[in-house]
Each structure stands twice: as C-alpha cells, then as structure tokens.
Length: 252
Image 1 (cartoon, rainbow, N blue to C red):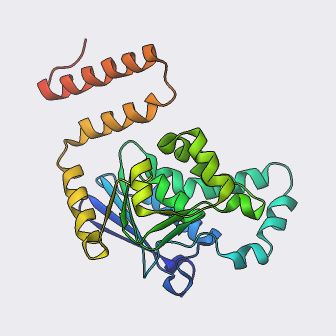
Image 2 (cartoon, helix red, strand yellow; image 1 turned 30 degrees about the horizontal axis):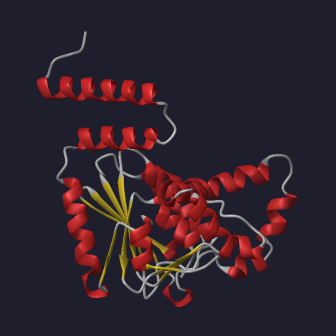
C-alpha cells in the first residue's frame, strides 16, 4: 500500500467520507498522507455538505509516525532555506484546516486512541463522536515540540486556556467521559453504537437548510474573535441575506 492509498476517500451524495487506512500502525500519519488530505480539501465537490472522518481498525490515529521523525523530517524542515520550512508546515496545517470551512460540516468518529496529530485531526472537525473506550492525548510538549496542526486554537476554544495548557504540558490521557464533560467531545457512546450515532448526527445536520447552516457556522466561527458590535453587524448581514433568499427579493 502506498501512502496516498492510506487515506481512503469516497463521496455519497452530500456526504464525503475520509478514512485513515493504516490499521497495522494505528493509523499513524505521514506528510504524504497530509498532502493527500490537503488535495481532498481542494478537490471536494461543491455539493458536498458533510465530511465524516474515521480511522480504520481499533484506533482513530496514534499521531505522527515516529519513523518519519527518525527518518529526518525535523532536520529537513530546519534545513530548508528562507521561508520554505514555514511554508511546508503551512501545507501540513492546510491538510486539517479545510474541515473548518463554513460551507462544510465535519464529524470525527473516534474509537481507541486519538493522540497528537490524531487528536488535532479530530479537533479540526466540528463534531467528535467518541466510543466509550476512546483516549485523547496531546503529547507534543513531552517530546520537546508543540502541537502545530491547528490544535492549540481549537483546544483553547473548546476547553479554555487553563485546561488546554494543563493537557498540553502534562500530556495526560483524557477518557471519553471526561472529554465529553469538558467539551472536547460532542457525544460518547458504546462502540457498537458508534457508527449509527454518527450517522444519526449527520442526518440531523443535513436536515438544516444549507444556506442557513453555512451562515450559522460562519457566525459562530467569527464570534470567537469578533467584538460585540462586529458580531451584531455580522448577524444582521447574514439575516438579511437569508431573508432575501427566502422571499426571492433582491436587496436594494
């Protein structure tokens, strides 16, 4: 199996499915897999509304494949001239960040472990449905590194600065129950119910009119950094666009 085949991608109507497929290595990730994820984000059809992200086998993802670091990725990035290293990490980040686009709703279906890059991939999604045996962990700092795939912002948004700092600096594992209680997970269910629960969530998400769903997601994404006045203005603009669409009247 090539590394590009280690990311399986299918589309069924408005739902796209992305599966990490390296079960023998607990879906450990590589830069080539990130390249493929980035390509999927760029190639996604315009009629896709929801993306479901899963991992084959007993674990969602054990994070970055340690063999990649041992193989010289760190030295390669540091040795890149000028801003090339920064740009390359930016490409890695893009592999995850497209899941936050306002026109998409993304669901991570997590069983087993979601560690490091695996947790950051789950955090990139709008919703996380966990099996009760799931364990989440952010170990980068313990390795002398930092989470650099978008995970720091999402972690603070979901659990707050203090808890996010504690999770990063201690690298401790968080079980499904605690993850749900602190807001890291949307739902936690028995393993046998995991796929069915995720499908029910997808169906519920697709029941919302697309234009309203896009506007609502954009508003909520912007609310994190907008001032109260800016958020009120954004709500007014979004509502007027939707009213114009509902009535078929062009705004003057």
